[in-house]
Amino acid sequence: MTQLKPILSHLDPIIPSSTGKFKPDKFSAYSFHRLRCHPRLAFWSFLSVIFILLFFCFSPPDGGAAAAKRRSLHTSSYTRRMHLDSNWELKARNSARPRSKTGFSVLVTGAAGFVGTHVSLSLKRRGDGVVGLDNFNSYYDPGLKKARKSLLDRAGVYVIEADINDAVLLRKLFETVHFTHVMHLAAQAGVRYAMQNPNSYIHSNVNGFVSLLEACKNATLQPSIVWASSSSVYGLNSKVPFSEKDRTDRPASLYAATKKAGEEIAHTYNHIYGLSITGLRFFTVYGPWGRPDMAYFFFTKDILKGKEIKIFEGADHATVARDFTYVDDVVKGCLAALDTAKKSTGNGGKKKGAAQFRIYNLGNTNPVPVADLVAILEKLLKVKAKKKVLAMPRNGDVLFTHANISLARKELGYRPTTDLETGLKKFVKWYLRYYGSKKKSAW
Ligand SMILES: O=C(O)[C@H]1O[C@H](OP(=O)(O)OP(=O)(O)OC[C@H]2O[C@@H](n3ccc(=O)[nH]c3=O)[C@H](O)[C@@H]2O)[C@H](O)[C@@H](O)[C@H]1O
Figure 1 (tube, rainbow, N blue to C red):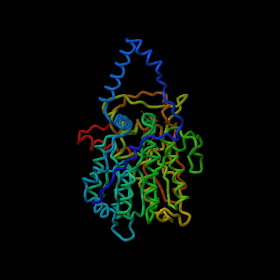
Figure 2: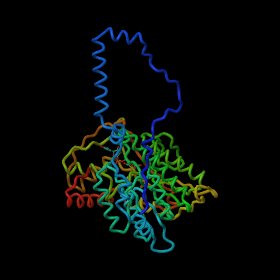
Figure 3: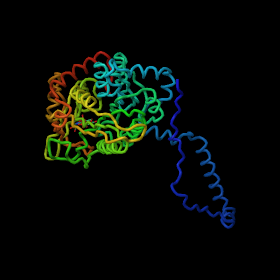
């Protein structure tokens, strides 16, 4: 097994950008004399020094690191993981092997996530080789992510527990396996959580994306990349339906801003290094094995518990609506994007020619008010919800989303077929089975 060295960048000393001028304090003979002349002042100064010394002796040596840890989401160390999994290279090679010569070898980041699990299973089912990567962070119940991983294990998809920011691991992985494609779904999701933990969005959606693109660009045989952007890039736009040609420079949340940044970063890597990159703007994806932080999921949990749910409305009682898109439809769009992706042109960091760059909306084209979503859940759960309608807080939410999917229809053959009621029926069935049998907490 190759020994993987930990990244030590977090231990870099803080070095000022310029040397500046350092003026030592003057402690003149005069002031010393004055100190000696005031015994009470000397006594209190002595006590202060003792107090400061005691503080430094008994405070934890990694105070900064501990504070940083509190700010960041928990992820398990890749080094520990890879040392435990001594056969990881062999497992990754086997898992990446397609059933036929024409099949793909796909690295799926965020494989234990909601969409990542569904995409990995679909690829494996049709005969592609798949290796998953996921950091299993604690943004929501890691138990649910582990349960998804068990599904993947059973399907023969090997999932490496590591973070996309781990450049050493990515380099080793790309040296071990020749991936024809990367399906990049690892991200810090959630619109409202960005106000609580802004750094986690920069960490995953900006730094992590760059780290992954660096590994892809350095690969001897560069993979084609398909990745998840978001409907949230349309931000405060009011013209509907949202088209890929519309402006995307007015994000309403930091989440949206990092996804928009991702689109610009993707363009740069395409332009400089010849990476083939396709961005997919997902519209509020829902379904079985979904994310507990999303409204349809925690509404279900709270309705069943008899807990009050909050339904947001806009100014002057304006309806809040979403173009809810069923996960199976989105997965079809993802696979079609992989199938139609052209090869990257670069090699080992050098561009050899222009490469494909695409962006598509993957929505349902049928926005549904949140109040209607709740009515469908009430019907399916056979429980009346305790509803409280309140003005949408300033939390990054937008009033509505609505996808124009004509480009994806034309170029990917993307045709969503699941309406909200049909999709929620499948979700509720899964939810009751999963939490009913396991008696687990959803959040
Ligand atoms: O398309 C996307 O790119 C994003 O989709 C999803 O974001 P959203 O569309 O905001 O979904 P979600 O949180 O389920 O709220 C749904 C509706 O319920 C309303 N809502 C929410 C909470 C609440 O308590 N009450 C309420 O009315 C709320 O106002 C909203 O109208 C993903 O989470 C995000 O990661 C990203 O992928």
